[in-house]
Length: 350
Figure 1 (tube, one colour):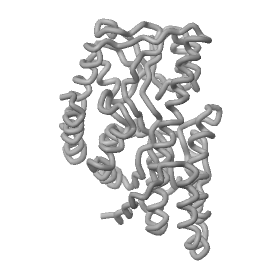
Figure 2 (cartoon, helix red, strand yellow; figure 1 turned 120 degrees about the vertical axis):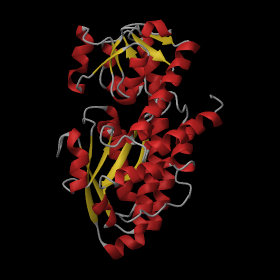
Figure 3 (tube, helix red, strand yellow; figure 1 turned 30 degrees about the vertical axis):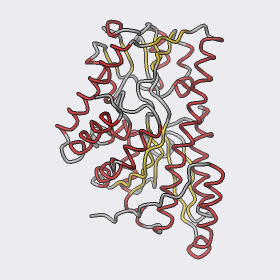
């Protein structure tokens, strides 16, 4: 079994500036004694989107500052060193030390990544998501699944909600019938059950696909991340509410790479990941609200509201997909699925 990462303490690192200064103060002495380690961290985001600098580069700098320079993170844009779809193997093999990326890319290989990414309707708030991951112990099981692939899973980073952009107004269950949507992973499985037709389109071709009617709608993370892909220019509607309250990215490190830094730096790294998720959730949420208002005021778009029956069907089908994942991956999803059902009971939804 690979070395088990040190569990970080529950110090209050959930505020940006104070957290960074506090951790940096704690980390500075060992940095002087132990020297400097440099990791290259690649993301799936291109440099042109607003969140590349404001979320990803900020995270890299925050780790460097928090460790007093003992661990220096060099940010790398999408496809900068390896193709995005090859990042998991590159991190495992040590060709790339780490990645700030999207777990849906390897759900076929690590089904538990779907639980990290987030299933439709399973949590509305960042606190509910964090309760599932950290308090209920879901992240420990997810880490075991990644460790089996030679990867250390540092934890989720919230990208805020899963927003649907559409050229068809979606309000009722009937509206989903035949709706062609660019979708992947568990969300696509739920849409099939709703009567929609998921279509796989590379991000680079999505704008044209919407413009030419190849698809009638798409999700690309939250309202604001979709805005970064200019989806507001080729869609008439944004569907409310977000189908996942907090869709998560992830931070991964090769197990061998992880084992070479001290337990103290491991703990600091994990704390910065968790703090970044809390900060990013607010960061994205504010921009989601801002861009949704601009969509209406400047673009003449409309915000449509799903009715109660549609929301209930989406949640019910999502739990069916959770159970399907449990059946095909009993070692990891088989443990995570019942925990997610329990969370819904605690939320009073089942």
